[in-house]
Length: 336
Image 1 (tube, rainbow, N blue to C red):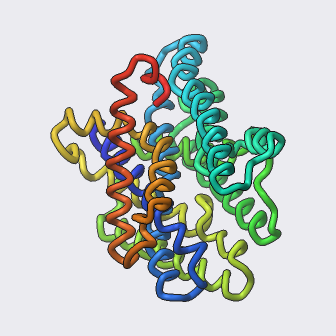
Image 2: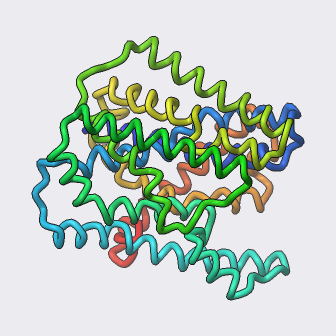
Image 3: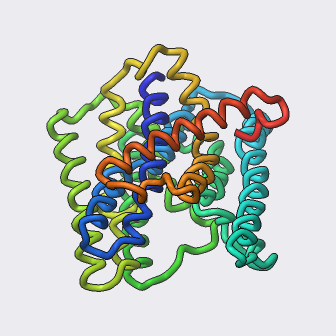
């Protein structure tokens, strides 16, 4: 479906922008002009990860797929576990190299602990989380086949409410997320929601969709600021959580926006190719961003109002090129 390919392409651009803007959110003084610019850009793209989860649900929960358990897992091992193992090793090596350059070498125990925590690098958590969703997908399909659409909506609303409460309690209590093997449970509602939004023929009005998105975006930006101001940045980060009361409606509204555009962003072939390289861009872009920052041409080297979108696009293009090159090499094709 063209709209799902469009969603992939724009969601990965949003991921890159989120990481570009993060430098201003965490390094600039809270409430300063630089901080607000970073916060606005960051808040506007918080839908990116939930949209990726919903895309996966829209594609994988199709009950018409009749592949056996063995066939399903064989495909997913090739598609997900190979990149997971390969890029975990790459980013552990990347951390070692950075430590040597900074004269602050990482210990072996620290690196191993990061793997056990599901975060060998800050963006790798997503792959560790989604492994759980893929592991249970054949059983989720059985639920989709047996349940009515209304029952699935009840499941999604109830699950999303519990996940949102959990996210709020964790942040307000200053707790860290639990073991990475449990992370996927919080994203199961998004997974089912992706399937439901693909299937539904009921569309809210475009004005309502835009209104919800804008209200959720404003709530995210202002909510983060006020919570950080009265408490701490760590508490304020609740509004950046992918399961916060503002990011959930923002993400759902974005999926409706994508679904309303059935035509590919460019010609069908180019759109397909760009969408197929999304995982590669996701995996590669942190290294590209850090190299640009290291040589002094990152977003913080000039005015953030224009540097954030410019650097986002540059990082995306460089990571896209690297992913395309890897896709042409038999030895690395399965790694992206």
